[in-house]
Length: 167
Image (spheres, rainbow, N blue to C red):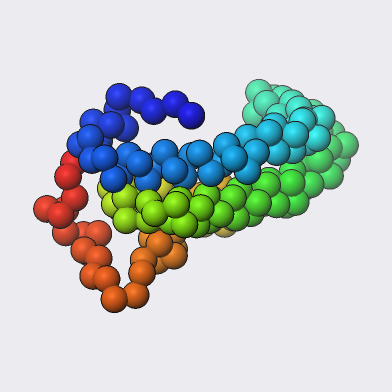
């Protein structure tokens, strides 16, 4: 687990927020998520390479017949990657994110992680629209992650109230 200076500064050295992020990342480490990701990418590597080759040649080719031949020969590779492998991979990683959030909450870092996610969503999550950005995203929408971390009986500041978030 690596913590960079930018994250610390962005979170204004808030111990709870940094601890929440660390607990989340340590949960990924404990579950072996990185090893599973590498294994999955290794299995999909031949498809990925064929897909990447096809896309690059297609983009570089100005001659229509080459593009047509590539599509006829390799359409199934593109369809498999775009319609099966990548969405399943993304779905699995969204589940891993929820599991790491839950583990951090069980360890007592729910409030810190909630604060960090609330602040970080303005930087890396972005607005999602369209099939690709929604189905291929490896992180669940931050709003859903925040809701899962919230405990009943507690009042959480609205994300729009930037004065409550130390940036």
